[in-house]
Length: 619
Image 1 (tube, rainbow, N blue to C red):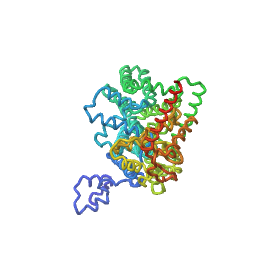
Image 2 (cartoon, one colour; image 1 turned 30 degrees about the vertical axis):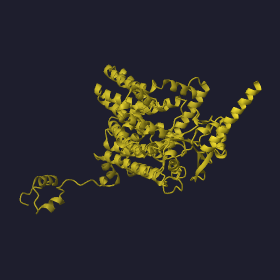
Image 3 (tube, rainbow, N blue to C red; image 1 turned 30 degrees about the horizontal axis):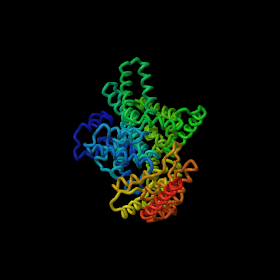
């Protein structure tokens, strides 16, 4: 050694890093790790790979694109026709589309008529979908496109909300995956009801509200207020989510004596009621009549308490079903596996308004005893649940313990498997298209009879329930003139809503009607008689189950008498019959105009003879 001085290894590495590496000493430099440090071994395992993917700057776009594409595939496979309420919501949106595209019909009276299409709901969703239908067209695929846009809007709103709460892109993206995979979101995305857009509006409004909380000024208050107004007009139960949170923020700012913030809360909070006046004022009389018929006005104290207890028990079971029981069971393990570091969750105080919204809704929905909660009312609850579980999942992936990391991996994997199983696994196994009722996978995931089980699953067997066949048959006979079709059953497959929707999208001259009228207890009323049948051109009759019960009992006898008259009187001709997948038979009867004319002529002659005899008797 020339100098006899020992050079430290760290100093030698620093010196080598500052020199240009020639081809001759490249191998020596690599052996001294002169290049950039290697990726740690723990970052190359499955949890590390998932964390890098979740934290990618385009991760939210990729996740939304995947689930929107999956929903588009579901629509491509599904051949069923929506039923009951969803069909009328689609038709109401079409009315808005026609109003927007025909400027000559623009008038205040027509606008108010759009607000009064159904007294039970504000018109926000109808206007949103009606605007989209001006782009996508008024068809079944147009309605599907509206659902795809709503799902994308939900993803965007949730990502903004979760990012505001956690200030962590990975946690927001993990929650986005879990949200899209919950059974409730899958079910809401299948039919043109109000609830998917209502849930998306909740996510957007709360993201804007938290944005105002972080940067209190009049501009952010205006944005939050406008989104609050839109949230309210998507569905009026938005008030039950918003009042607890806005009240909490109001009291907090009042306690701090921050008068400017108090004024901004009052300002943005007033926009919701103002928007709701567009629903309440035009429909005031109908709303009051409905509440009276449901017993909401003048009910006894015992009846109120019994309904509150019933609603609370119903809410508890339905929330478990809406989240997905398996993922819900895994959540305690996520909680127990995560030890929150000091700065692990930035801005976690912003989670409090969201939790207040959920707890306040459960309390208020329980108190509103006249309207039992349904799973589709829980959309905003699932949003908050997904945000929490997404954050816990990422914290588990970041932990240094292997079993904790595996719990986080399992949460994401189980969510995706649940979504694929609920949407696509039953299609090859269904022998006949009964949506959700014969697929064993739903029993595994705890899905019971009800809203979720009615709106999940695919029908790959085409028009097995003959809805399109009905119109093809009638249109083949009635070439030009408009005819009425009286739909006597009220089942999921055959009801006035489904038939009206199909007639609308086909632009058919067949006009479906029904003599059934819904009672406040969700049974059907039926007051028509066989004599009224002469005013109908076609009757749709089904053997076996007829769907909704007819009450009271004497009205059921009237219904049976009408069916018997159509089938046995000879005044209606059986045109075609077709077997249905459930073993029953579908029958189409057409009025025999000659026989009815002869009968009416005979009745007229008999009446004249009776009058003449009565006159002679008096003389």
